[in-house]
Amino acid sequence: MTSESTLFSNRWLPILLVAPFMLLIVLFFYVPIFQAFYWSFFLEQPFGGGSMFVGFDNFARVLSDREFWQAGWRTIIFMVTASSLAVLIPLILAVAADRKIRLSLPARNVLVWPKGVAGASIGVVFAFIFNPFVGILAPLNSISPGIWAPGLDGLDAFITLIAAHVWGGIPFNFVILLAGLQSIPRTMHQAAAMDGAGPWRRIFDVQLPLIMPQLFLTLVLEFTESVTSAFALIDTITKGGPGGATTLLVYKIYVDGFSGYDLSGASTQTAILMVFVILLTAAQFLFLGRRINYER
Amino acid sequence: MIENARSLNITASIILLIGMVYISGPLYLTLTTASHSYEFMLRNGLAWYPGDQLLANMARVFTETRIPIQMLNSLLVALGNAAATCILSFLSAYAIVYFRVRWAGFAFALILATIMLPLEIRVITTYQVASNIFSPLNALLDVTGLNGLVAQVFGAPVHLEWSVLNTHFGLIAPLVAHGTGTFLFRQFFRTLPTDLFKAARMDGAGPIRFMFDILLPLSRTSFAALFVLTFLSGWTQYLWPLVGASTPDMQTAVVGLARLVPDAEGTVPDFPMIMAGAVIVSLVPLLMIALLQRYLVQGLVLSEK
Image (cartoon, rainbow over all chains, first blue to last red; front, side):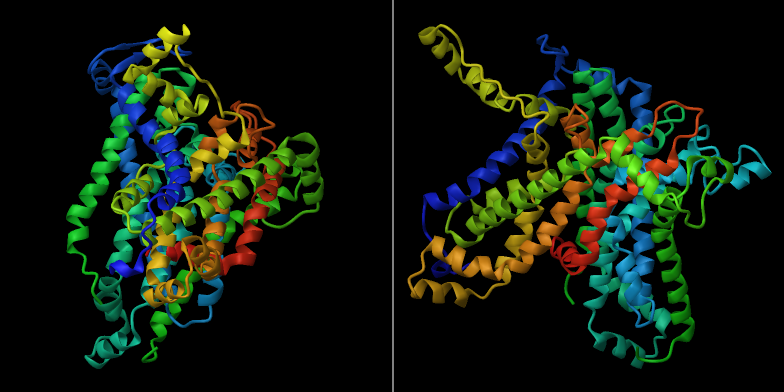
């Protein structure tokens, strides 16, 4: 739509069309973001008790808080492990489903089911399945007590979270990666076969390089997704425990803000988290995005 | 395939089988546990085969919990989210693609940026805005000094207050403020041939007529795909309905389900009933996926291109 004759030239109508949506976005996206940064420079009293400009005091307080750094590190560890698994596993499944085998069709059906199960619902289910007393690993505990104790061992709780996160992330990543694989022209496979590349070799030398755009996209989206989907899972599976071992930043912000009424602290952490997410996305585009060849 | 690759096909089959077990296993265990009594679960732990208590457990969910009324809330939120997102996204994408306006690129960038910072990250201040959606206006009047003027003339500054917390509108509106739909429609409009537009103009169609008579019928599949996607997303929301609604009767079913698990440590919760609740809560979206899978897959792929 670049040619001038292919556009309407009304003046007010487009403004009228965009206005309702823009109003919603400004109100519920830009104002909250602005307010988080604004509040991070004020000491806010709960229940409208007034506020006081304190400069960088809030940042100094948050950044000298050991719990904040621990939650931050846990967030990064969760992001890296959970999202790389949540891309790698669907990738393997997509490569398998791309072959013309009998199981391919039913698998394409089953693998999108998690899209209909809420993160909190699957959290409730996984909390039960991995329950140390009645769950799937309970027999392990009867052999040697304490092997599986997500209520006491932080690592066990972390593993449960990651298993639940990957479960819920499969549909989107699988569908995107499979669509990428299926858009590879058959002639590419044939040409590679003529050159003597076997089927295993073609996976690494033809398929993977050609779905780099899709892989990049799923990875970028998955990073943000892992920060946000974690909340429902933490709140239903571990409540941030044991001993804070699964308290990621999103959960800490929620607890500080809604249970501790520390609005300034929660806003400051929100501001830091937002900057972190934006920087991370920018870094991905800068370092990974550039190397991707979108030409086919 | 080009040549017979048996080893690869067998490996692929095994991988797919494992994947399907990983996905359906938890769902199967949910169903079997929901079909046993509490005492049976205490004695035997996980149930590997179905029992005969499914209906009894489901009946208890309907009589002992608020999940029935919460399902209604979920339905309203999901439908409202889907309908509002479809309509508003369509209109804004139409304005951005088909009108000669200088701010089109800027508006699109503003809309697209919403994808980067999801609601879960900005929940604290979104809650504050929802508790009085006139607060930005009040602040604006204060900062510009208009309020001082008003106070001098009328004796008191303007201070409007309207909380949308604990209302269906409040549960839906922040979810709609998301750019995926606009992106999806924009991409679709750009694949349409420009001749279509020229022909319509030649026949004397104005912007409104072009939108209703040509663009709308052509966008039917995009609408369906976006509708399914946003309905599911509305139904499965957790954090926003958790804070946006404070009474059990306004909460959504997913929040109600999570609340069934007692906070107290030590006792084993009534998992069969909770699992029956999980089955009930997931029934509507899973049914939707089963019936409209084509549109779901299309929506997921379209929202990416």
